[in-house]
View 1 (cartoon, rainbow, N blue to C red):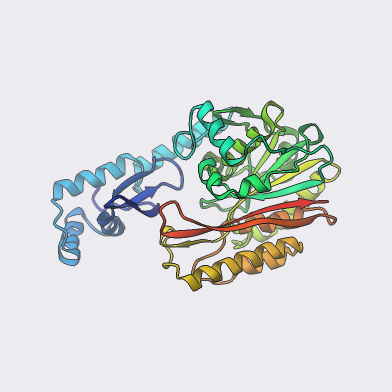
View 2 (view 1 turned 30 degrees about the vertical axis):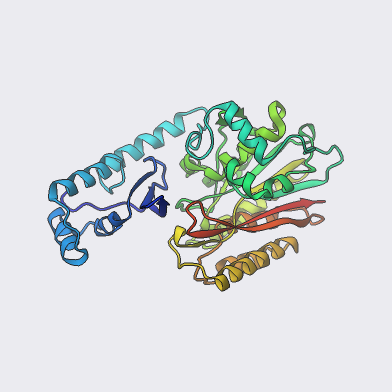
Length: 397
């Protein structure tokens, strides 16, 4: 508390009636998301580890005209500390305990239930029915679908867009699949490009087993893919994918191979470029002669103020959509290099978040596979101050 330093957190503007709020989210999932008055954003900016609380208060008064009593400031920073949001011993102790708890757990517990989708099984099923109604035939015994790209929108948002309903059709029956390989978008920091876990995933609808033989074979070939297994603790994209798989297949849901694709797939650190190549080689070997469904849980560009980027003009939105469509076209043509180039180019709205997963699936698909864009949508961010590019893609042999 002498010179408090805020950890890296996600901040999103949110308007609730007349109130301008700032939603703070811990990318490591140690603290629950919470909302504060938007004007407190400047307080967070000053918690950089170089200012005492008295200096923070003085800066707020002199630079921003904000007269915050020292005791109130101390209480606010104390709450951040207790939540594990400061870079201090409280955070390190909580992180060490969370790491131990996750590794010792026999299953990966849900973290989004009751937060972004309903916690009660009946309510969740009703929400999924609105997004992906079972009145439409989803499974086709003659299906040649070998892969999908779907957003990781929660059911209520997905229902409003309609993209998942149109994409999740003509799927192979469960008894034809040895596993569903989920290539999930990793939103957190990481050192290695890919991370696998062999834990089952649980949701309010039950537990989906891991295809342990597949996952363990990958771990034997590439031990480093399990080094940062803790990243699966907050694997939002994979948890959402599992919920949809449970809805589609029910009690016959095939086992999964959960794989997180990190930004170092396309932005290699020293040594990680070779790791990405070795991962693809190992996966190609494991996928050979196996009947699997490749499920890519990914979105495209996250644009606008909601994601800490410039406000989006009409022309800017058109440019974002064109880049997203170019990315999907590169996938349709099987051009992994084209995907990587589109994702790596400098852009005022940043890089498409799902780029690493899209680039990976382009390299893993059979040569005979062809991708078809089912629908593209540029939808409003949850708080209305940005846009999210979403694509529904089916890949068939």
